[in-house]
Amino acid sequence: MKKFTLFLLPLFIIACSKSSGNRNAQINNRDELVITTKDQKVNLVMSDSTIYMQLTKDVLAKVNEDLNNEKNKDHGNNWADKFSHFVVSNVQSLVNKKLEYPISEIKDITYEDGALKITYYHTHIMTFNKIQDEDKPVLASFNESDAKDFVRRFHELKSHWAE
Image 1 (spheres, rainbow, N blue to C red):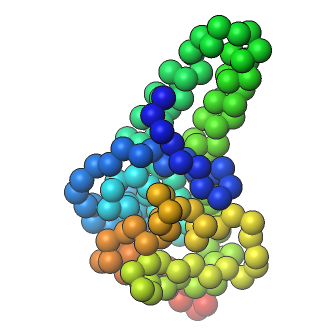
Image 2: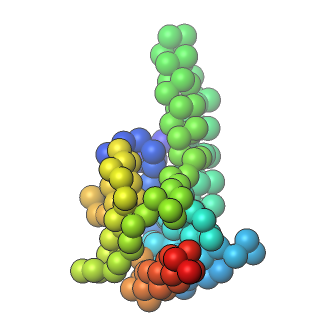
């Protein structure tokens, strides 16, 4: 199985495979603003009411393929096979989830020192700020123009709520 790196709390697994190229911020068919990291691994998405982070479809497909291969391996020991299947199934369950917060729980989003900074009204165990890829915060992995579009959209939404 390909190497994977677990970060802080095991909500995200980021595949080590790299891809080149950059994507610009875009509005998807659900009126969500989607920005993607420069290496095409993670999407940060803003709807009218929530912000969430998840692996991109390509990375998620590769991770699931690798995990399925690992789950189906025969380790030659019934207990080892059961334990391996249990662990891999739980990791697979976690990796297919997204980290999501209502916009109402987010106080502010800024772009400083090359990274998005998200401030919350309350302390949370897991935040977008804690997700890392290869010891680098994922929030520092977006194109500057995409990140600034994300900040601008957040402030537009918050200002509409204040009216």
